[in-house]
Amino acid sequence: MGRRLTFQNRFLRQLGAETLRNSSFPSNLTSAWPMTIFMSTSAVDQTRILRNSKMTKKRLSQEERRNQIIEVAIALFAGKGFKGATTRAIAKAAGVSEAIIFRHFATKEDLYDAIIAYTLDKRRMLWEQEESPQDSQDLEALLKNFAQAYIQRNRQDPTFIRLMMYSALEDHKFRERFFEINRSPLMKAIRLAIERGIAEGKYRPVDPHLTTRSFFWSLMQYCINRFVASNRSGDENSDAEMVNNLVGIFILGITEPAVQPLENGLQPT
Image (cartoon, rainbow, N blue to C red):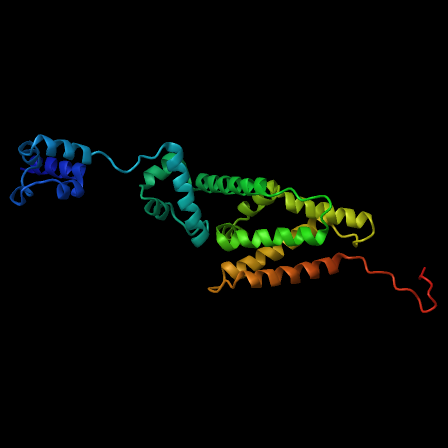
């Protein structure tokens, strides 16, 4: 009897509850041995049972499963931190066993490294989609374009800034890797515009690299406050107001002050 029930349960799982509901089984047979049910139905019903018993859920390839695990892990890491998200929680959220996780990633550290690579690859794709700035664009226009694009991107999906925030709190690995491979055309254009302005005497002799990064971190802090630390993210009008204010302060801060003439009209020496 035990073997009979085991086979019955296995068969029922294979056919699925949907198959039983859709098949024309008499109500008094639904609790009987499924093979008896199958043999007692018509050829048309048998064909329908076999067709419905096929796996309807697409079986993921190794690469698809690996990417699925990474994307689930990214969401959990962004919510709980790299140390707070366990492989058990990742497996549960992905609908797989922990054994499947470790089949693709030998350790949690390997999964962490894969998340860094995966996230930064997507960031590279965004950089490649950025329009190359025109050489004629002044620094103010470059700063506004970069700030508006960055804030809009993080308003739509704050996952990246969450990962950056947790990285800064925990091990800095993700954050450091980002700056190692940062190839944003707009950030590069901002740095070059600052260098030109310094050479022309328009801007004070600041460090162009550190100055560009300072602007980036100001935007990062705004995004953290708006889209991570607050339940109210405001609207795009408030974003535009902040960008205009920040760019104005930034430009004013690095601009070489004009030399004021003396009362007799002469320039000071």
